[in-house]
Figure 1: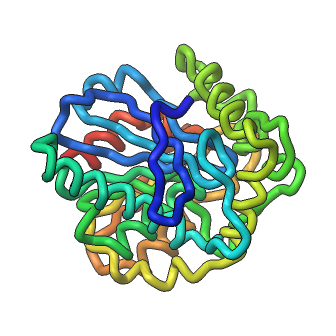
Figure 2: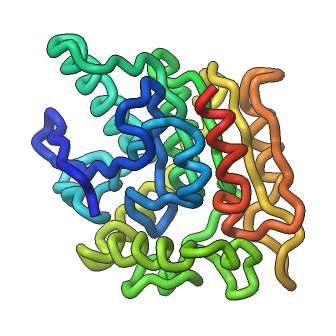
Length: 273
């Protein structure tokens, strides 16, 4: 459940969840998948060891965040702008009150959240200094299942997770995933439908050349008895559209759709540097 609400200048509210070390001077923002909600911790032990403060914001219609209103922009870039407004205003408040200043932050995104993370880095390089984008598809491989991702109740299949995923052997992971999916469904299928509209527009990829932050593009490979929906080929496609030498594609052999949980410690080390 979101720890508090942040009200945008437009009047729309966002649910904000926090984990990690609240006293840390290093902030990492985590962007959830479709379907999903903020507050999911892929590996609490790795999170504790990272000594970072981690925040996640529910996208519109998920968790505690208000749904979009008629006329509100639906594109991926708009969700990146929501996070940018939150970060900018939080920094302003910290400066005026003598609180912690975070400066530029690390950003992690899973699936659709990875698109938002990359878009944020491209649009606001002044706010982002490290990025990890996990299992992000390209416009040609992207899918949206209207039953699994567009209707509640959501299940592990909504995340393309099979019962054979090796990460599910991690203690407590399935329970944390179930809680994330329950939070995602609090407003019914509104969040999933809003993501579906965002995923129809691929213009966020046209701005990848503006990313300045060192980026990991992380993909699982070789788990289960079927092909993964997203692969390192998607990562290579994204990398070619970013400045040369800035992004690195990471292939995690033996990992499946839950690769974010399999290598969460490595991801946090990158974005916490």
